[in-house]
Amino acid sequence: VIFDPARFASELCPKFFRHRNFQSFTRLLNMYQFHRVPSAQRDSKHVVFAHPNFQRTREDLLPLIQRKSSSSAGVGGGAAAAAGGASGGAGAASVAASSHAPQAEEAPVAEA
Image (cartoon, rainbow, N blue to C red; front, side, top):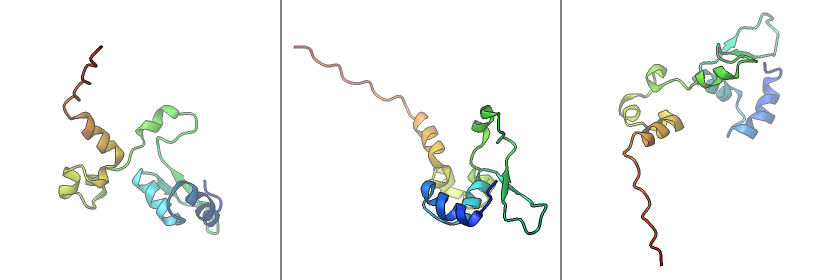
């Protein structure tokens, strides 16, 4: 629950993100499949987001919250996604690094 979106954007967003834009924060949540819960009150300033795997006492579900893949986002895709481009994020980089051949062992140190 975000009680004051304007204050959230001006005070908290800059601490954790490179912007002060609430809409950018909303877009980021949508990339992780969070959805805005409609307000029952028309004049309410509160903003609520929900995700089925984001539950107060269920830390075991947090790894299931993952960024949408580029193919399901419907934007971009193509050669950049096939090559593991920027849309893959750090997860794609770690998968690509782990799929390479094992690294060579360090050369033995000669004893005197």
